[in-house]
Amino acid sequence: MNVFTGIAIFFVVWWIVLFSVLPFGIKRHDDPEPGLEPGAPERPRLWIKAGATTLLAALVWLAIFLVIDLELIEIRPA
Image (cartoon, rainbow, N blue to C red):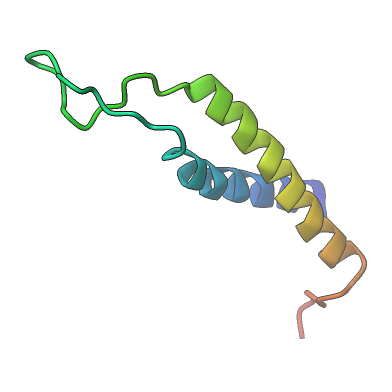
């Protein structure tokens, strides 16, 4: 796996993990003020979720890298 492929795979994995981490810990407003979206989270904690996403994406990327590097799945043109 070259550097560009590694970065591209990490980018895709990061976004997939982000969308699976976003719903965790969401608490809606009990009594939303006028003008607020009723489904908007009270405290989204995006920095914590971005950090958790990066850590989980790094672990998933490492697993993908090892599978490719150890040739457990061969990814070569025919």
